[in-house]
Each structure stands twice: as structure tokens, then as C-alpha cells.
Amino acid sequence: MYDLMSWIDAVTTRRIQHLDVTCFYNDKIPLSIYTCATLVHLRLRWAFLTNPEFVFLPCLKIMHLDNVSYPSETTLQTLISGSPVLEDLILISTTYPKGNVLQLRSHTLKRIDINEFLDVAIYAPLLQCVRAKMYSTKNFQIINSGSPAKLDIDFLSTGVRYHKKVIRDILIDISRVRDLVISSNTWKEFFLYSKSRPVRQFCYLSHLKARFYISDLEMLPTLLESCPKLESLILEMVKKQSMGRHEEKREPNVMFSTVPRCLVSSLKFVELKRSIPRYEGEMELVRYFLTNSTLLKKLRLNVHYTKKAKCAFLTELVAIPRCSSTCEVLVL
Image (cartoon, rainbow, N blue to C red):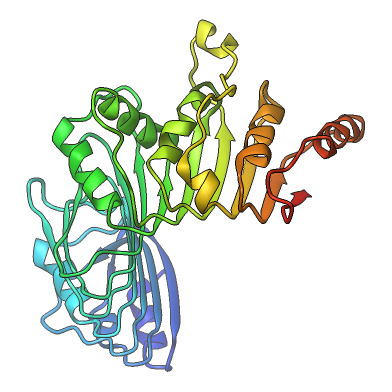
């Protein structure tokens, strides 16, 4: 007979360090889990957290909650506050009472991953990275003296126009970080917001990973113009899942007429990735970086070709003049 609570009770007394449990829908988690002295990594899926009177997880560093529910809004707060060395918190499809904000306080938390169903106020002075998915509103506030070094943000809805205040608040957050991961939907919202405004400068940003729709490549110089001290760029080309007939046929415009400051003064590493067939303008994009990047040390091309097409691609590639005499080109 299936008895999850007895099984968890048993393993928590055996100095277990890693516990990964996938429950049947809303299986209750026993109270013994809240005082497991040796637990380092906890992952729960489809569980129901019982309401503890006391939580003390002295070794827990990683907490991953996926589709987890709980009886009251204080349960999750108590679980987090009772983990004095917690460093990584992942909350996936974890809901919170509508209209309420999860007050997340931790003096040790370094990384947090939150989904679109949560609104979180983060009090974490050691915070290094925030990864957030959003629909129509910003779902996190960072309330501490410092700022995280890295943001990874994604707007999930492509058919919703975001309020200007939401865009403005996120742009302020981006202006404080050194490392940014951004999706094509998110960057397009920023581009539309900035059309009638001066180009915002992200002066601290040195590492950028961006996904671009092929049809939106013409916005790339605007993005780079916003990053005057950018040193590393990873650019992944993707194709829209739902694309209109006319939009699908439109070729990307990569005949850029401007050279952003970072290409001249700071950019050292570029990786171009694609998980789609070769697109029109791909070689022009490679040419743009090779002929304009003064300090470029490495250009990595993570692309796939047939044997015949790869030979033609390499022949054309080696003929492109390089602005940086020390640039190494890798074709994977």
C-alpha cells in the first residue's frame, strides 16, 4: 500500500541529504521533513505542505517547489525563514493567495527563480540572480541595499501590451545589473517602449544573452547601443511559433548602418546560435561582428550545416576581413 508519509518519516531519520519527491496530486508532506537536520537539497512536486508549528532545516541550501500548495500564506514564509543557510530557491507553478505578496526574507539567499503566478517582495542582501517569468505585470520587487548581479526575465504573453510603468520598472532593474538574459518577447517590448525616447544606457552590463526572432534582427544595433561596456554577447536566433503568412516571408534586415560603441571599445566574445535552418542574412551578421569589433577575441558559431553547405560557408567565412587581428573563429 502506498504510504508516502511513512516513507518520508523513515528517510528523514537516516541522515538523508537529498530528497526528491513527486507526489500524487496534493499528497501531504509529513511534519518530520521540517526538522530534518541533514537535508541539503529538497525538491517537491505536486505536494501539499502541512502547516508546521516549527521549522528548522540547518543544512538546506537548495529548495525546489514545483506545483506545491499549502494551507495558508504563512506556510511558505515559515519554511523559507526556517532555512538559515538557504542559497537557491525555485518556485514553479506555485500559487499564492490572489492579491497577496510573498514577503521573502533571507540573509543567505543568492538565487531565486519565480513563476508568473507569484508576486514576491525579496529581502535578501546577498542576492546574486533573479529569474522571473511574467504575464502582464511585474511580479517581483527587490528590497535590499544591493542589486543582483544577474537578471533573467521573460514576458510570456505575445499578445498583451505591457503598461509603461511595468516596462520602466524593469528597465531600471536592468540598469543595475552586470549580467542579463532576455527573451525576444521581452526585448521587443523594450524596443517599442523606447521608440519615442532616448536610448536607455545599461552602463553596468557586461554579459548579455538574448534570444531574437529572425524577423526582429534589425533591432540588434539598438540593443547593442544600450550596452556601451558590453564584453560578452550570446545571441540565439529563433523563429516565431505562430507567424503570419506575410511575416514569415519577410527577410531579416542585417545591413546595419551603425556601429555601436561596445563593438569598438569593449566587446571581446560573441556566440551566435540557432536551432533553426540557415536564414537569409546569417553571413551578413557574422560579417558585421568580424569587420566592426576592434577588440574581439573569439567568435563562436554554434550552427549546423550539411557537409556540402559547411564547405561553402567556411570558404566565405575565411574571406571576411577581421577588424581584430587576434580574433579566433570557432565553428561548432
